[in-house]
Structure formats: structure tokens, C-alpha cells
Length: 101
Image 1: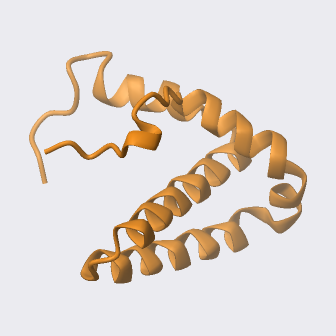
Image 2 (image 1 turned 120 degrees about the horizontal axis):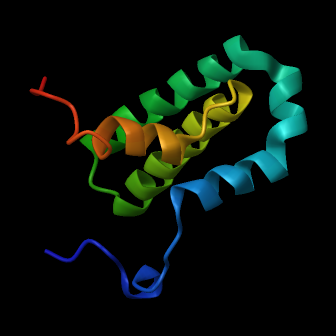
Image 3 (image 1 turned 60 degrees about the vertical axis):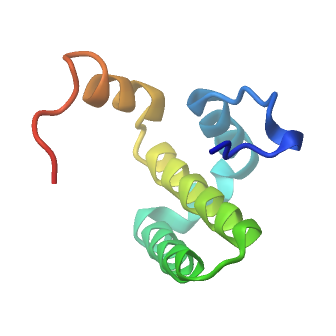
């Protein structure tokens, strides 16, 4: 099953590039809002994703997945976490995590 639409088939967006985009566009507002309030926004987006997953609207699902990732990157930026590095260290550097949930 091909999950990429024709319009996005050639997009090569890295985690680092996206996190940097979020930082450049929103960092001042994010810093002013702070971690606690940003986490509340993140959780709200997770709720919206949970609702979207229950439906059939693929465009809405894509939008909500993107929102959750954007807010996760925002939280990472506030805390000085490089998402690409964190993902690499957790899932690639030493063979990945043991076991599963």
C-alpha cells in the first residue's frame, strides 16, 4: 500500500530541518509561553489526533499527525533537545531499544 500522495512523493524533509523550521518561525512565542503551557497544547493536539484516528477523513488525520509532531518539536526546542539526535541515539546507535510495549 502506497501511503504517499502524488503531490508529496518527492518531499525529502528531515527531522532536523523541520525542527529548525519550527524553531525559526515560533521560538520567541514558544519561549514566552513556556514548557507547561506548551505541554498543554501538545496534549490537546494528541486529543485531536485521537479523534481523527477514529474517523475516515485522511486529510484530517494527516493534519493532526503533523500538528502533534510540530508541538513535539516545539517542546524539544524549549528544552534544548535535538530530535534527530535523540531518535538516532534511541533507535539506531546501539541497535535500538530492547523489547517492546
